[in-house]
Image 1: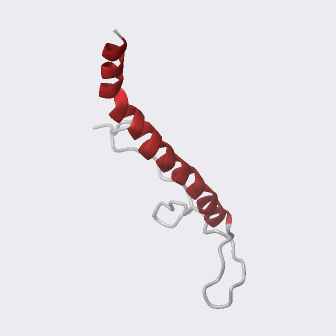
Image 2 (image 1 turned 30 degrees about the vertical axis):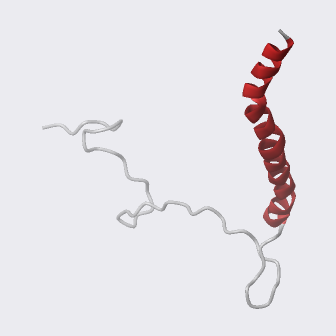
Length: 87
């Protein structure tokens, strides 16, 4: 029975060795790489010419092109939420 258990352990050895010699060191390298990546993300944006710190670009707003009256246009095409056009 003793040698039977050793034979079963021998079949499981590649899995145990893969965990000890491949997965754990790979995980340690991955965790060690997080520190420098976080420091790169935390750096403030700088000007390429003079090196001064600049603000991040803001999100662009969508400006609807209209007739120039300054009033928002309503949806009157009959599709969507606007009032349908009468015939």
